[in-house]
Image (cartoon, rainbow, N blue to C red; front, side, top):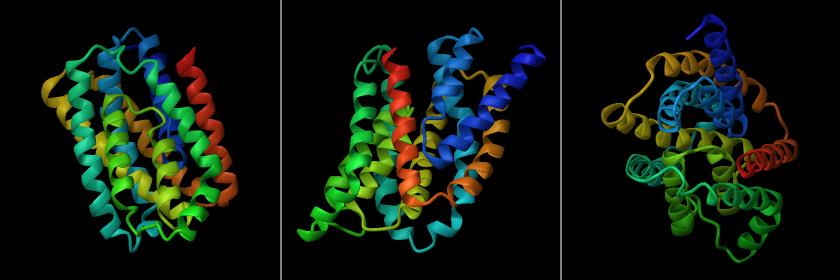
Length: 249
C-alpha cells in the first residue's frame, strides 16, 4: 500500500471512529475505501471490522460518564449482542455476500423511521406501563437480531440500536447512546475474534483503520456528548438516510 493510500485509510478510519461514536455507519466510509484500494469484499469487510474494534472501545471509554449505573442493563443486553454477533459473523463466513444486500437498506430506513417517532412510541408504551429498565424480552430479541446484522455487515448498526433503545427504555438519549457504543463494541469484538481465527485479515489495512478510529472515538465522544437530544436524533436520521441511499445505489 502506498503512503498516500495509507494516509487515506487512516483518515477515513478517524472519521469513521467519530461517526460510530456519535451515531453509527462509519463502515460506509471505511468499507468502500478498502474496496477502492483493491481488497475483495470479504477481506475488506473482515479487515474493516477488526480495525474498527479499537475505535469502538475508544468511543465507549469516551462515554464512560454516561455509562455509570448501567451495568445491569449492559449485562442483560450485552448477552444478546454477544450471541447475535457470533451468529452474524458465522453467517458471513458461511453464506454468499449477496444474501442481505437488499434487506440492509430497508432495515436502516425502518430504523430511521423509528428514531423519528421514538418519543411518541415511548410515550405510548409508558402510558401502558410497558417500558422496562432493560427493555424486556422484546428489546432483548431485537438487540440479538441487530447483533446478527452487525456481525454480518454492521453499517448503521448504531442507528438501529439507538432507535430500539429509545423506544423500549426510559432514559436520556445520551445515556442510551453510551449503551449503544458498548453493545456495538461487543458485536464487533466477538465478530473480530471469529474473523481472526477463521478468515483472512489484512493486518495492514486493519491496523491503519484502528489507528484512525481510536482517535476518532475520542473526538466523537467529545462532540457527541455535547449535542442536545433533539439535534442528536436529527443527526441519526440524516446519517441513516444517507447510509440507506448509499446501499441502495
